[in-house]
Amino acid sequence: MLTQGLVAVTHNGYTLVKAVCGCNGNSAEVLANLIRERHLFSIEEIYNAALAVEFGCPVCLAVFTKTEAMSAGREIPSRYWKEFDRPDFNPRWDIGKHENRAQLEQAGVMTD
Ligand SMILES: [Zn+2]
Image (tube, rainbow, N blue to C red; front, top):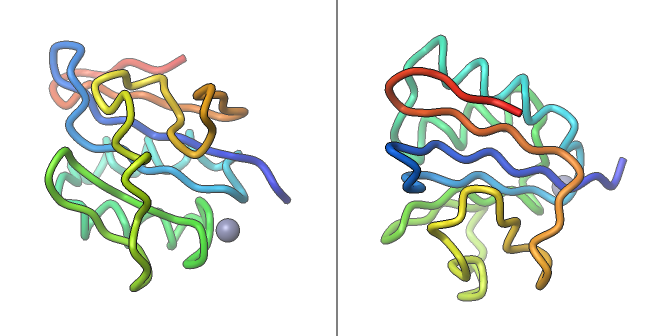
């Protein structure tokens, strides 16, 4: 199913990690719960968790911080860092649109 997904880990409103995908984005909430329960933080942990819950697939999944990124061997377009500080901005689309989104505070929890 082609649904875009965005999961953002934030701290005090600042984005720490973003996970974006172009398919199966409807499992954004599942991924967010897993990150929360297992206290995942590194991009590698979050990347593997995303694939485990089928949030996206190896073709479209990208997990990145401001300085590091992880994807299936393919280079992530620089536009993915556009509006990185906005946890609700999906960089796969120019206008930042998303169908599915979950956001969680690193300490504490916030979702919509
Ligand atoms: Zn995909």
